[in-house]
Length: 255
Image 1 (cartoon, rainbow, N blue to C red):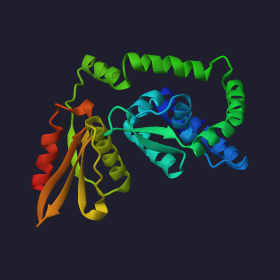
Image 2: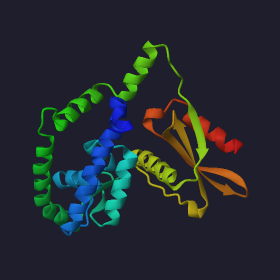
Image 3: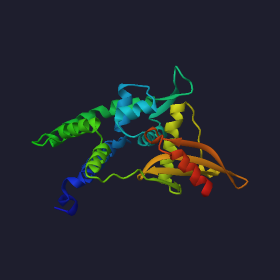
Image 4: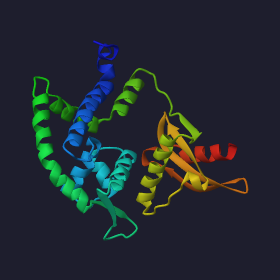
């Protein structure tokens, strides 16, 4: 038993990630051995779109249960593979919906026998006294009732350990953070029905706001005659009315 295993339930996230990695690596190897250019991380989006299509980015995110930025990253990868495409919404031309391309549809059909094999193997893996699949369903139901954060905050309140939300602002210089900032922008833009792209190569500068270490909003500026010009400011719905916009603007002024 290693240190993480000795940590018990405190390391449940790491243990789940470890199981995920074991399944992901072997499944990807099997896909490749069978001649398929496919990765397990794409399954949820491809499967959802094979059942119902077209769907908006927000609808896909809700169906697969992943965050909007994560969903956008997956969609970009699938679009680069020519497995999906965006089309204009029939009722609102400003909005874009996502659907499988003919190549994507053909791939799903070809993968269905593989997915049946995966169902067989996973069923045998989890069919024990402590059924992992049933346990995951139960935990997800409880998280829908009350999130992990809500439970932690409630416990902290009970124990008198209340801490106010900490807002931090930083200029983005890392590619991974830039991808998150752009995903936040796209999410807010999609809600407004407008899409604008800002490429750092063209001189745009990004700032990110964090609340207790979690990405909450972003601002894009361009420098005109050495003066900062605010091009766009976006804050996620969960963090509105917390002073994020003001904090971003103040950071830009003082930078």
